[in-house]
Amino acid sequence: ESGVTLEEKKEYSSEVEEGCVISQDIAKGMKVKRKASVGITVSKGKEMTVVPEFVGEILDDARAMATEAGIELEETEEYSKDVAAGQPCADRRDVGEQQDTQGTSIEKGSSVKVTVSLGEQTVKLPDFVGMTLNDATIQCSTLGITFSTLQENSDTVDENVIIRQSVKAGTEMTEDTQ
Image (cartoon, rainbow, N blue to C red):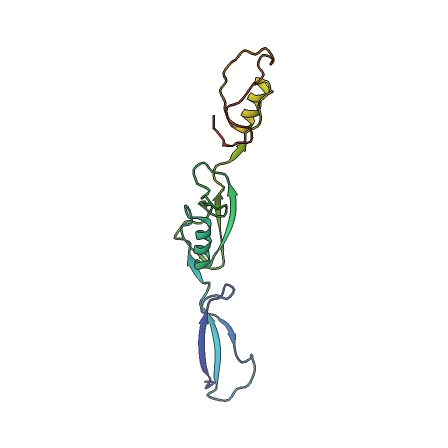
C-alpha cells in the first residue's frame, strides 16, 4: 500500500472514456510523502444533451434554444410555400426542418442541421406592354406565374401585342399567382 490518499474530481471529456483518469496533479514517477494527497480528475464521459424541437420556431428563438442546450445550429435556407418567413423582420424566419429528431441525445457541442424558411419565393413582374403574347407567355412560364388575356382592337398596335397590364410592372408576386 502506498499510503497516498486520492482526491477525486469528475468532469466531462469527449476524448477520455468514462471512468478513466484524465489528469493528476502530481506527475507520474514523482516521489511523495506517505499519507500525501494526490488529486486526480476522472472522466464522466461525453456530456450529452437532448435535442430540442426547432421546427416551427422563429429562428432567433431556435438559436437561443440551441445555445441553452449547448449545441450549434447548422443553418441552410430555402423557399417554402408551407412555412412562413416570419414577418416583419427579415431575421425572424421560421425553422422548417431539422436533421436530428427532437428528444434525441447528442454530445454537447455537436451541430444540428436545420432548414430555415425564406417564406414563399417572389418574382418581380416584368413590363409586358409592347411584348408579343407568345413572348409574354414564355416569360410568365419561366417565372412560374400565369396570366389571362382580354382581346381588344387597336389601330396603332399590331395584333397579339400587349397594350396594357392590370398589375403594375415591378410588383412582387409569388409563384403560381395569376
